[in-house]
Image (tube, rainbow, N blue to C red; front, side, top):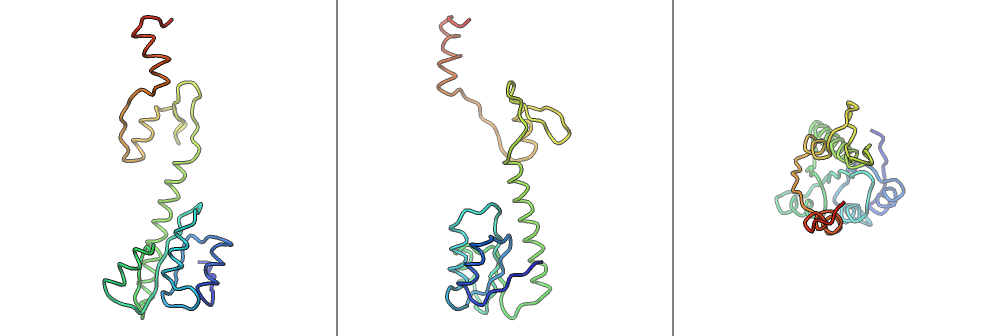
Length: 163
């Protein structure tokens, strides 16, 4: 990991604004801006990649855990922390961020035929968009007719006036 260390929450926020990090490990109790406020600020900005946040704290108990989650933390480690536990949680963070990046890629630009709207998949085969998406997500499709297509296609067919 490339670690960026800051002296307080205000410096951490400034560093994040300059270059949003994919992973933030922050203390809860720190000068200037505490970890909860840092979480809230990070969650309030739009980032290209999801910043995974782990709060490290001496505060214990369910109420503190819930408060951290509500502020936008993804995970919570109590002090004194076990280095093996931190390492395991960092691996979980990597998996989650990696999956989120994969989803973002799938949401990105897709090679689509401008006529039939089929999509070219990773095997270079052209498939229907419904097939492509249903194979990669849990999305289900419900088909309807938009007002423009109804007026341009369906209504003329019903009226017998289409070409």
